Length: 305
Figure 1 (cartoon, rainbow, N blue to C red):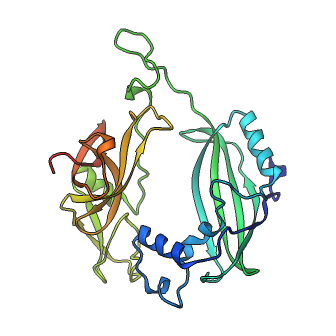
Figure 2: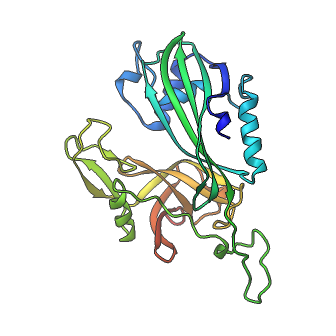
Figure 3: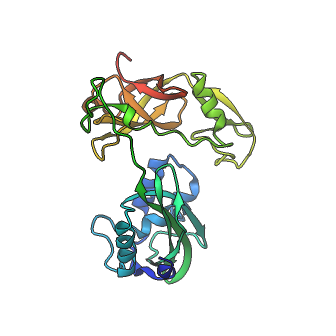
């Protein structure tokens, strides 16, 4: 697999649209970003939109190489049939402005040695995309995935000893996914364990932020304290999950982007009403549920609000 490193994944791709104001506006509205640099006649695109200008949509890009397909076929043959995105890194060379024409090329930058993870054993594949605007270097986007062979699961059995059929709703077949807790968000999960939803507040400019971050993206300050959310909110957006099935969950179920009364938004399960009845603008109220021993999660209930 090391022979694939340095081979092209996409050769001379072209952005399907030039950098444009409508896409910038939609991005900023979705992210809740009102920075003046992204508005008006001298607007620039938010730097983190870098990948958006290179996406191929449902039809993809015609320049995808056979090397990329061959690498994935090799991994599939080795039993690494599952994939999960793990992280991305971006470097910015110059701002993108409306009217810029985007071109790019991608290479398979690295394939890791075999790694063992909780999901299963597999390989991390990193793809580097170099982005140009009107022929000038504009930035670099590195995207890393894990191609892995799913770890074996214990067969679940009913009380009478017979195997349970797939989709029977038995959560014992797979544990609930655990949140990734680090030094930046440990305080949030400590609050959840105590049935409190804590929101960070910058001590320099008083801006609230969620999810938890080490610094304020409004003023750059690194000092913060917390305020406890009142627990009221509205559904800003949502999805109803049907597929792919995951043994820890019973589809269909609703996952919402909830706007709290304090003004920040968070992703959480929407419960208390059938998934097909969840609607944008619906009022919800915070609850805490113990989904497994030692694991409490915040959810939002839309019943009797």
